[in-house]
Image 1 (spheres, rainbow, N blue to C red):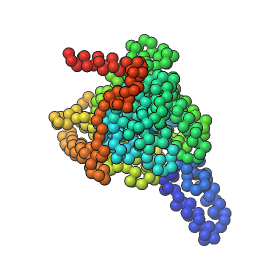
Image 2: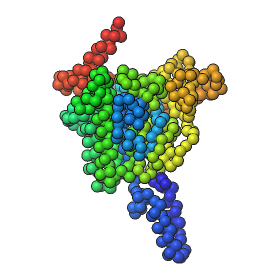
Image 3: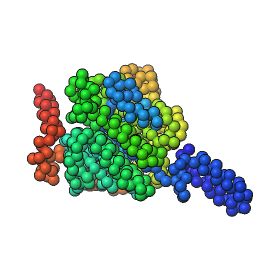
Image 4: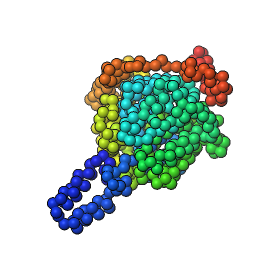
Length: 507
């Protein structure tokens, strides 16, 4: 029974009414005892129930097929498997976009990323947007961000976010942050609210260690906590600890490093869940895990579980990702085929806490998943929309329509319940459904164009204007760090990769 949004309080008022009318004290006590038995533990404190702690965990470039519970041929993920067995495991959970930064914007706002100005990496989240961190901070939560940020508009390998960055996590509601601009690996440089620190060890374990320290600091204050953990794993370049890489020695070097990183990430999730139990917080914590987009095509074995497409595409392999929501004692463990997405997370939390509608910028593209916590749902009332460049798609329960180029007007229709591999185009065989869904997608796309222009904001324009997309090493504030940082292996690796791609494109 979910009571945190206030729907249960009329029963308590009824108790008071019984007493006021002079009814028997025994009846009053009987009703009170029934309530004590029926209410979850977190509702028994004096006054209104304490709001839950909320933790969002997100992998970076982890494909739908890259878990043990999906029977991956070489990767074992015992801790994610345990979380999936104890929580709500989604078979159809979607990232808001098939690439990194936009999905992160969708998590924080509940909106399609293009509405927020984050078209792809190198685009900053607009200050006019309203985030879940700001809403929870206003509701009394202590808030923290740990790991990859990727919403300040800077391209290039991850570096510490500077204190004067106008788009750092603190500007969007995170009271504490230990973050980097983009992907990061072993022994990273990170920024603790603008102060640069050198860390040692695996990047996922560092992120979890910082998040645990945050939880430990604040748990005695009896205030609810919101923590966002965004790993840099398993984004390229890949560099795993030797012991984590060793089980994959027969794979090519990149794949061995990639899967080794996932071993460490899984272990870190186990550490987080164990600490929640040790702190006595597990039953008071809503814990969410997902990935920011589909898996990588160059990694072998397959990363997307046999789906079509990979990161960067709007086929299922680019959008469908692992998704788990765990809340012991509240969510009944099970597998659901209900379609959900990263845009649903903010609306779900707002519904759970009874937050006012003005915590959002409208229109929203996500819905509340709160009813799904209590029971299985047959149909999703609002379709899930996607746009990435000229690509667009719409998922309406079992059906999906997509186009790889809105300008050309060529669309494909699939029944995902019968054809998750998107191999049979139903455009010709279901013309009425095709026409209706195409119209719906195009109409939504026009609305996104209006949002991108700034019409959703009170000012009816984007202000301040979106910053120019730059590599961090082009920004004046970083110039003094460049001589030292350009010798770091992750920077050299990035330059080598960009140079190689440039040469290949020039052929």
